[in-house]
Length: 227
Image (cartoon, helix red, strand yellow):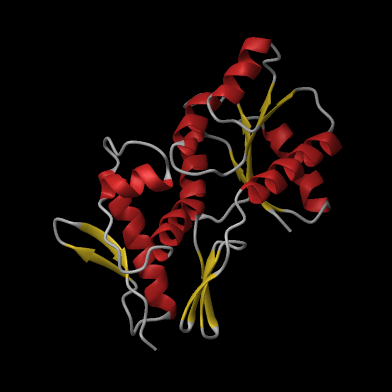
């Protein structure tokens, strides 16, 4: 079943939504602030985010823009702001749907399912296999022989892009432009952190080969194992 992130500063709403989605077999992760939500998105493989607009540390709109600059992860706004201008804004900055409070939990689930399915149908990526290593978009994971490891959406997007172009060097600017459709601006350090996480996770399952390599002053590349 799908893994979803609930982002809302109202514990009652979070608990009610979690109870419902738990009962339907979803894996549910919760966050009460934008900062915590962003950390979870960076470190977990998710299928959808249900995002409140009115958060204590940052608006849901601002968080959506940050997420959308880096990943195509489906985002469903859940908000008490029912005005048309808010709905339009939420969709125009990259939200996939906008549900107004009060709402039906069943309708919310159907909207979440629809956005997850449409997101996957829009670009059905295939598993990439290089010798004993398989890179699996359906689960944001990599399998090496009998071992597997999961990646966050951010991490997997980068890994999959590089693996689709083996032995080709990409600068950080090219990676940002190709993967997240955004200029790099101040994000080079963030990319270095993501690359470090990808390397560590791959090393955990295949310590005998360095799949992600760095060419000094040039960029990054994916080097398949010759096995």
